[in-house]
Each structure stands twice: as structure tokens, then as C-alpha cells.
Amino acid sequence: MEKTEKIWMDGEFVDWNDAKVHVLAHALNYGTGVFEGIRVYETSKGPSIFRLKEHVKRLMDGCKVMCFDLPYTFDEICDAIRKTVKVNKNVDYVKPCVFLCGEAVGLNPINVPVKFTITAVHLGSYLGKDAQEKGASLVTSTWFRPWNLAAPAGCKVNGIYVTSCLAKMEAKHRGADEAVMLNAQGNIAECSGENLFIFKRGKLYTSKTTDSILEGITRNSIMEVAADLGYEVVETEISRIDMYTADEVFMTGTAAEVTLVTNIDKRVIGDGKPGKVGKQLASAFADVVRGKEPKYEKWLDLI
Ligand code: PMP
Image 1 (cartoon, rainbow, N blue to C red):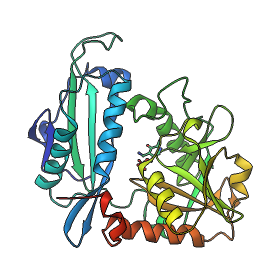
Image 2 (image 1 turned 90 degrees about the vertical axis):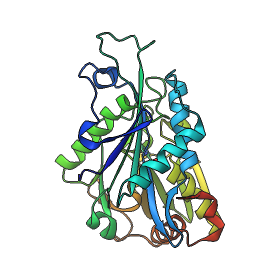
Image 3 (image 1 turned 30 degrees about the vertical axis):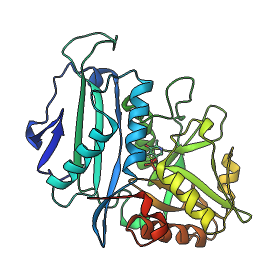
């Protein structure tokens, strides 16, 4: 990944090479952080941060769950993110991260100082051009999605991502693009960094928020866009068999956007080509994020 000019760190911009923390940082040792991933798109009115407010709200909710004392207001965080996008050239992805730092050993997170950084980078296509154009392959991970009783699965807590990293590595080792994780009940939860949708017998289905998923902002956007296009969208339990036998499968996420799936555990999905409904939604989403659909301008944050 190419270095960018400035990283926002506790209210100030520092050079990329100076954005450092101590090796005893609590988050580094115990995963005590909350982060976000936000896309920036070019529109005819200039760069726009997609659904900035929803991302900041989710970040602040995660901090509340973790009992982090955030010394910034909602508006200050939105502003700092806008400024970070502005001072860096050619960036399309922003990663705010709130985490416990300190220079002490011990698990107790109470009174450990909080650090807040915002990094903006050029990410491009997250799963690669091939997966995006021809369809991605998935494997069902042997690692389960941490469930709501074991971890705050609905928050982007750094430590939880160990499972996502293991699942992603397993997918790569098995020659696939991405991994789908099951939950404690053996139903489909989500992928390592994406929510999953299936299209079957004329309806769209996606896993319920109580099924140990992160409530994706792209998932929410697609649900609204799909409903506006006349599709029925059902949040429900999805079994592995439902997934294998679906007419279409696709993933949604800030980084992966809408990526169509053509193969899961060596089962061909549909006719093995990117599906019609998925393509329609991917293209509608691409227009929405670039400000080409006036109805969804509410989701743009022009800078
Ligand atoms: N699930 C997980 C585990 C994720 O990390 C992400 C990426 N944030 C998603 C789903 C998709 O969420 P969003 O659409 O808000 O990026």
C-alpha cells in the first residue's frame, strides 16, 4: 500500500512515518480498538464520503459498547474525517481507529488512555479486478463467526477480526477469493469483511442482525435500493444449503462494494456467471455512490 501524506492523530496531522504507538499499547496486545472503513467516491460535484454519518455513528456505538471515553463529539469526528480526506491526494478509503494505548502490562482496560487516528489511503478494488468482473469464489470457513454471546459481533472491534483474518487466510490457502463464516447455529453469518445476500425464487434474502453479523452499511443501502427497484428483501436465517442452491449470491461491503459470487465450495452458483439481479444492484449501487441518483443524495457527504 502506498503511503499517503498525513495521518490524523489525536487532533493533529502527522507524517505517515511518525504515526507510531508504544509496543505495550493495550490494543496491540489485547485487540481493544474500534475502527471503521469508509469509501470516498468522485462525483460530478467533487469527492464525496459515502454515508459518513452512519459510519461515525457505528464507530461511536462501538466505543460505547467497549466503554471507551471518546473525547470528541459526533460533529468533530465527521469534520476530522473530511479534513483527512482533503489533505491527502488520490484517496478512496478512510480508516478511523479508536484504540487503547498506554505503556503498561495487564488486561484491565479501565483508565487506559484512548488514541484516535484517521488514515486515508488508496485502496482500489478490494477483492481484485477478476473477482469483481467475473465473479468471486467462496469457501465455507472452518472458523465460525464469533457470536453475540462471545464478543460484540455487531461492532467493528479490532480483536474480533482475528477470526476474519483466519477465515480469509483459509480462503486463500484453499484457492478462493473470500470465506463465508457460519454462526453458532450453523447458519450463514457473513464473509470475513462482507455481508452476504442470496437471490432465490424471486426474492432476496440476507442474514438477520441477530445472527452474529456486522450490520453493514452497504447491506442497508442495498436493501433500500433493491426495495426501490421492486425486490422483496427478507432478513432471515440462511442455511448452507440455501446458499449452495441459490440462483444468485453476492457480497456487500464498503471495501468490496457489491461483488457477485459464482462458486462456493466448488459448487457452481446459478449458471456460473455473474447473475442478472446482482449485476443490476451492483450497477445501481455504483451510480448511487457517485451521485448519479438524486434520490440517494442524502447518503453523500460532499467535501
Ligand atoms: N461484515 C464484516 C465482518 C465487515 O468487516 C464488514 C466491513 N465493514 C462488513 C460486514 C460490511 O459492512 P459495511 O457495508 O458497513 O462496510
